[in-house]
Length: 138
Image (cartoon, rainbow, N blue to C red):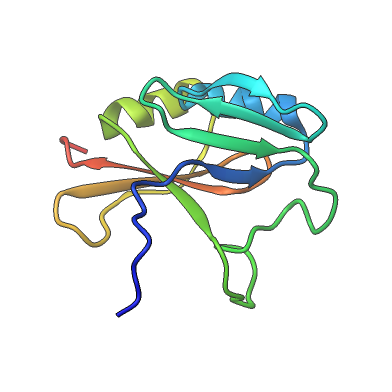
């Protein structure tokens, strides 16, 4: 039998964006801060206090900026569709989104695992972000 590769965890997720400053403003609300900008590359590395890392690749220059592949495009090609981030409190998350003027695209709604609630938002480039946590009087 062939040897398996021992994957320990996801290291980071790359998200392509059109405007770095606009994207950073959105992801700051989700608790991310810039760690560094890659030298010689259009990448900003951001991380939250729990070590979740995203790489914002700021070279998007094609496609309709009003659509994204998860919710807006009829053709369902294979590929990544969204990022799901675990949050400590859905009510506090909803309050922070409202306070910062970030519209909720869907939710709070329960999918799959009992007691789990999701809220879906879009970043400024319409990438879908699922904020998922335990049900807490929502």
